[in-house]
Image (cartoon, rainbow, N blue to C red; front, side, top):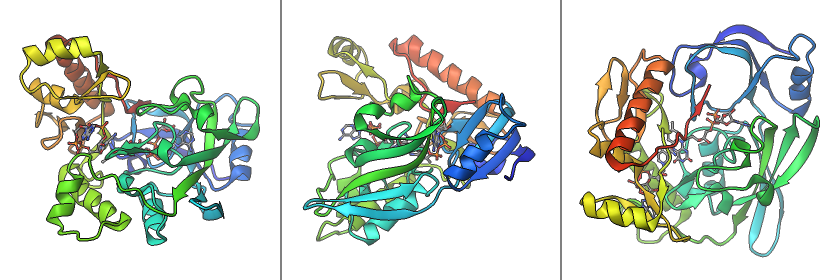
Length: 338
Ligand code: FAD
Ligand code: NAP
């Protein structure tokens, strides 16, 4: 058992704020995890499961045990006429997993290339990009149940996936530690190019014959041009979720604000671009000290160097208040706060 004390978390999360964990330990498999959870010296200590730290904002030191998921391995389980069933360890890097699938012609995850973080965190907020979400390729997951102290298999209905949400953010918060995820990937691809700038990028790339690799490459190019690279500028991607409003409210706002940016959802509501709302309030490119609102995408808050988590949090509160004042819309945080 390798429990380290007073460890800086700066290299372990993408906002790169300077915070410490009282205890820190990696685990490579279920045995190492259960040994750590049962360690006599730490029974009452609060615990945080850490993947790539790309969806976390620490506002203070973590006065507990950070358990870093390093469960590796990608395995083909079985196949049927249409699908391949692939299990990946929760500590596998998400983007490398996507590229592993593309190299083998396994289709379904290509639109989610270059999302930072780990496979084990992907179900937590049902990660998604360019019109595809984890739920579209999810079969099941294996998790350690900290309440019943056993390993369980959870299916899609247990996970209650929604827009950037799952039961792990609501009724099962802090209960399960995801060890591995099993994916259902297509043998024959179904391409999704209608979303964001994907079709335009494919055209710019003069792609003659569509493929999952061509889509992943286009997505990587768009993301690299638009989003801050966490290795250079601290950030956790979209800080807020896109709010969902009723048609009535949408019609009122669309009359009042020309260019009001929202799209219809299948269930008859409207998804508003949170980035647009923030931009309209004048925050895009704003900087105070080292905390800022990214100049190319207002939905992304950034740490230009030495910002504390409390400064970034304070900025996020100011942004949310101004959006509420101008549009009457409440922004919900996507990033997990500790
Ligand atoms: P962490 O940040 O380490 O953890 C996130 C939360 O999940 C924490 O509450 C943590 O305790 C919990 N958790 C982590 N692993 C486990 C586990 N094994 N078991 C139980 N709980 C766990 N997200 C999108 O959906 N789409 C995007 O396009 C996207 N783009 C991004 C771009 C950038 C530049 C950045 C920095 C972030 C982006 N994100 C995006 C957000 C982020 O990449 C995802 O939420 C990702 O899934 C987080 O993975 P992680 O391993 O870093 O999780
Ligand atoms: P974009 O393509 O400029 O689009 C802006 C917004 O419009 C996005 O929020 C997206 O919603 C929505 N949108 C675009 N095309 C759409 C369509 N055809 N139908 C419905 N909604 C549409 O956004 P971006 O900032 O460059 O991000 C591109 C993709 O990567 C998006 O899917 C975004 O969610 C994802 N992303 C996520 C994070 C994160 O941290 N969560 C960070 C960066 C990028 P959705 O957000 O619902 O897709």
